[in-house]
Image 1 (cartoon, rainbow, N blue to C red):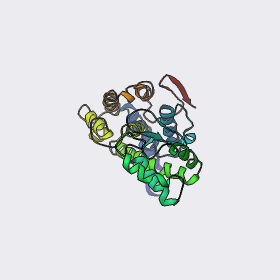
Image 2: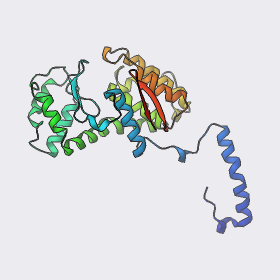
Image 3: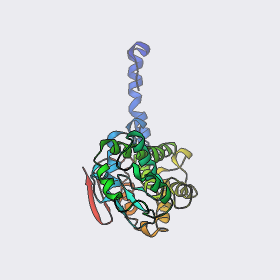
Image 4: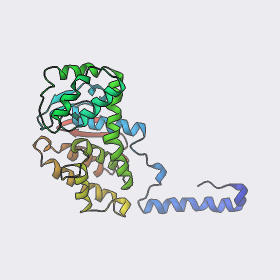
Length: 273
């Protein structure tokens, strides 16, 4: 509260100042924290935490920047999975990434695979990619231009849309991360196993804070819907990234996703101090 002595006078200032503790106390009694204390996931420090959390689940490491070169077929029916966010040859996001790389650096080492990536989109096929695609991906990953392309596509397709939707729903940093992690694994579609479908299922069980609902209640509903979606896919039926990570933060009341954080994914323990 910014009160000027020139506008209120010393006596009025004293009265106004005296009322401030009462206002804060009433807010605290109601379980409300002043909005200025909440930092969105777009804050650089919070975003770094989000990247490390996802990397712990996707790559069993907090060092997400070491994953630019990562590539393998994990047997989930989506072809090759690669890079810092798991771009897939079978879902179109890898094609978009390589097209961006070609746009920014024509003739790069991955440019020759654009045609093959178009053909395998929607399948788990490696046709036209093997035997050298994985090796060339690792080579490209050393290029700062390609690294920035990965960062930008991650933000355009996954981070920005999920965080934006979470903020519209009135969710703080933890809820924003829950949305982000879900869209990374399930994609931005609207079927029952995609982010849109998961959110729709949660909305049938609870209101978002923006709708007047309780944030913890809604996030529990969202995580329940997320687990149900994961169990529909054999490659994703291990729900530890929900049970021993996000649910742990939620049970601790850490809606701002403040450090220190300790959690487990797939049995491995991690800590961000």
